[in-house]
Amino acid sequence: MTERITMPWTITTTPFDDLDADRLRRAQRAELDARYGSDDHEPGVMPSAADVPVFLVARDEEGSAIACGGLRPLPDTVLGPGAIEIKRMYTAPGARGTGVATAVLRALEEEARRLGAARLVLETGTAQPDAVRFYQREGYSPIPLFGSYVGSEYSVCFGRDLGDGPVA
Image (cartoon, rainbow, N blue to C red):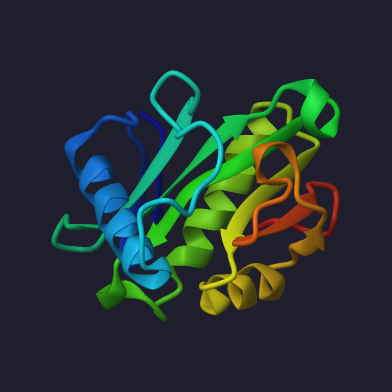
């Protein structure tokens, strides 16, 4: 396991199917289902341990899992070679506004570089204006819908070339 310490939390590489990782992803799904009014708001193949080789979990000083995010390499046919998609980026409501989401995003960018990615992309949704603002603030630009998101009325996609400025 790779460990990065950023006070007051610790960010650790965790198996996708880890119990705390699963709990955070289930909380995310419940929140999104409530925002969209159904559980049918994400097109495409659900991420799994088989296609998400990197999953990070942030824990607070007491060891509680408070944020997460993963990386799923995309086939070259989707956006060209070297594109990796951010999946299941989530911060528990009580930890929002603390900077932990930015720390997880930066750690994901570091891991993507380690995997040889040229570009990070992601999908968020029209009922998530907070996420849209977050990604724009963190240097991600709107891109056309890609892959299974093409034609989705709920999807908004963003991307960032990993050579765009410092990623600290």
